[in-house]
Length: 274
Ligand SMILES: C[S@@+](CC[C@H](N)C(=O)[O-])C[C@H]1O[C@@H](n2cnc3c(N)ncnc32)[C@H](O)[C@@H]1O
Image (cartoon, rainbow, N blue to C red; front, side, top):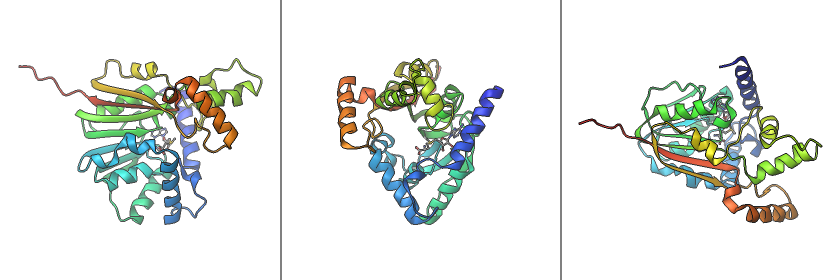
């Protein structure tokens, strides 16, 4: 890792340690039941597509790894669904959140630790399913993180990854706000996301770029699909901006202009030579 990417990773860690992902949805006292329930309600109201993508109840008894748990809302659903759940995040705060959460509901997970998605501390071929939602585009070497996800998944196992989609309505609106209106229209979409989307260094990908990360990897049955989100639809804004966003979505092809790029694939089974 270069000195620069090391520095970026520590800034990423600092950013998410300061405010764990999704916790802005609650004004209630930290770690109380009300706090966690507000976070959970907001998450699936704002992003119902997560449940459809993850399919939390279909992995009972399966060994599952969630990479980048954040406040642990999805992780909780995996545990409730009966998965043998392992979770990692770069931040101590994320780990603290999920530990409080599981205790509150009297639930157990197999292991939750601070770790880096670019170097997963697990053996090859260990998990039946590896899930990561909105995480690996934050780490400097996203491709390495993708390859780590594949490495720890067992042959015949499944990986589900969401990364941000560059050619999306949200990115274009971000560009208007941070490039055009700031009189620097020469700045690229990638520049705007890198400097203004959540932690420093955030990236977003086209479908082809995402597929390229899988080149040469032992994967098959790849399904890649952008999803139009609440953020593309300007869900937190008033009626007029929402109508404009809707019109833009129709012009740009609906889900094809969505901010979430969902990628699902199976790890190839070992070939037996006869
Ligand atoms: C946008 S949040 C998503 C969290 C959660 N998956 C969700 O959907 O709410 C990004 C998360 O990625 C974690 N993260 C960033 N870089 C990471 C890395 N190199 N290794 C592990 N986790 C990382 C952050 O700490 C943060 O919790």
